[in-house]
Image (cartoon, rainbow, N blue to C red):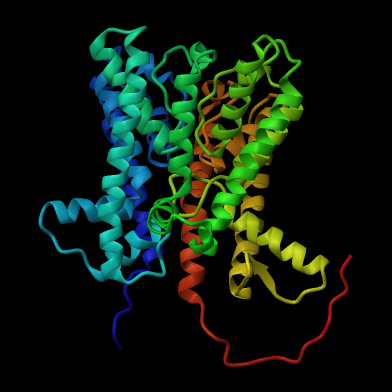
Length: 444
């Protein structure tokens, strides 16, 4: 009997585990901390997982606890995690002259959201994706640098601009501002907030969608996938801005103390950040509970499939909405933008959503039994970890070792779970040789 190769989904899982293990080892070195003392193993593991899974939750302030060496390691882990292990490994193999195998090409293509293209085409996409990433991150650095020079020495300003550009485009949410302040010192600076916000949006759209926009340039000629991503993203950003303005406009501890124009771009920024990069320009602990609950929904949805964002992805969310509309209208087929969506994709979207809800529910319940704090903070932290967002109300550094390990697992599942499950379901898809007699089931 011929040997069956290891599933591509397991290749991605093992690859991310290897990256996390390597990052944990490097961050455990004394040179990685500013004090020169070894970081506790659990803390190094938590930070490495958060970086590789481009989450941004931290148990130590990145700007003050870690040395420049440690910050460089974190940035490299963010870049590798944002690329996706398969893409990063493929680029490395090409660089050293190794010819990637068919399995490596398939894994790289799927991690970019291009699972329907030929293996040869996926390699071309990998190279273009790497070039686009470097160009966007360079542009982000150049846009942030003039502002950074106004409040920091030149060398530190360059590093600050590079770090935040890479972190923002990869939807990581790590910052080196210091004091767990994220971007709160710049909440009245629209240039910094909107530049980082634009980087987050571009990183959350996926390379395939950006490539489709550049190639076609007309709405009518875009693929249904691109139309779903752009429409849903635009709606969520606009709707989120309005809701945050409504809920926090009268809160003096957040937006209430700002001028009207500052309120507007801060509301827009905090509608972008949960999709999924954990930067914040206001004190998250001061937000109303209603706002925190609303932000958990944005974090759960996340960005586009094949992007650096997390969550269940906007395509999953949109397909379920289209399925609901079809059911309400009495239609038996799901249609989006004039095209019929195969039933198997709707089933996969439903499986992804329900399994993700189960993970968030179980994690929140476990954390609530492990630590003593408000449940809304636990719920918010859980959604942030699963959605690989990185926003927190400030309870992350206070978590005990057990709670940190729970979040490590949640971040890993949040980053790889939807991708791996979608790949596994696609690989197992095959027509059933047997059909059964239909019978209805009562609903409602």
